[in-house]
Image (tube, rainbow, N blue to C red; front, side):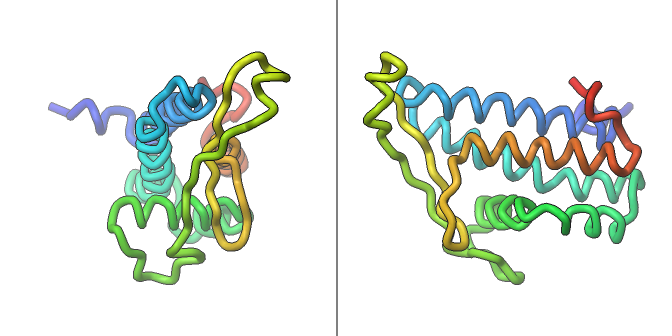
Amino acid sequence: MQSADRHGGWYNHFKRTKRWQTRATAALIDLPHTDFHEALDSSLAYFVWCHSLRDWLIKDEAISKSAIDDALKAYPEWKIVRDLANRSRHLMITQKPTDADWTVSREYDPFAPTIEGRERHHVNLFFNGHKYRLADLIIKTCDMWGKVLDDSSLIDAGRVS
């Protein structure tokens, strides 16, 4: 009997990654109503799932290691995914990180009450000298996978739900 987590192979892993993307971005855009730690936990879990999709594709023999690595090299976000996932799993990154000391912080948006009529906070990632809104980065990296899989003729990115 096949286990539910393996059913569908890499494709179902990709769909799980997209569900983590939905959870993480929903939590991040609803701060301060969402607990900061819940939003951060969901975000880091997303990056672990996002990074592990590479291994699922290789081990499920959907694409070769060299082909997927060549495809991912085109996206600067992949280095971020790799470092966030590896430090989240292992505490310390030992194999050629781009930024082993990345940081995450919470920022109050002072204009939101006037513009949106509500309080808003943002979660920022400081990585390799750059500041990223974590919610935007999650969406961008999920889109990255859609493009990589589409370019590799594994899915039609326009029809993945």
